[in-house]
Length: 193
Image (tube, rainbow, N blue to C red):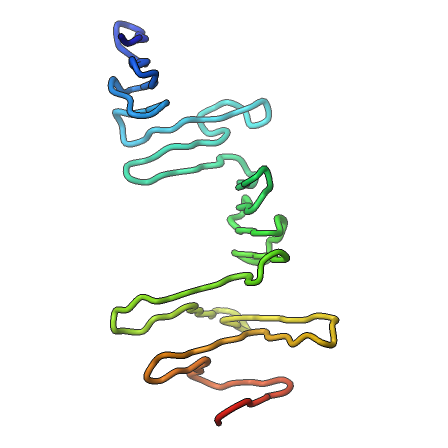
């Protein structure tokens, strides 16, 4: 048997025989199944600080084919695993991983626990050009496609601001520059020239 909840003689919610709860659905397929007759279906979370109008709090749901997480407040969105924060999106849209207050970069990664801060593997074989990392910086007085700093106080460590390797192709370029190249310090060449 099923349990139906109705207002004004219209079914609003149902608990199916298997224990699944449907809101807007008379055939729920999960523990809680929310279905909207409109394009938008959201659940809303508010508290004493956010207020409780339709434009307050946090929305989880979908609009058409889009899945949406929407913090309607001027605060960050935090992502945690094992009860530890791993990533934060600030109210200005900056994404912080490992450091949670940086507003200088659109994406900021502060890595002290992994071998690689960012690892990119591009293997898409379409017969054309595959770019692991592509940058295009323009519009400022000085533009850097990639800005890298590598430093340590240890005299026994070798620092690479950028390290690149290219193998396996007919022609392999670890670095290819279409334009002027400026070197402010030392240029070391190892191997064939």
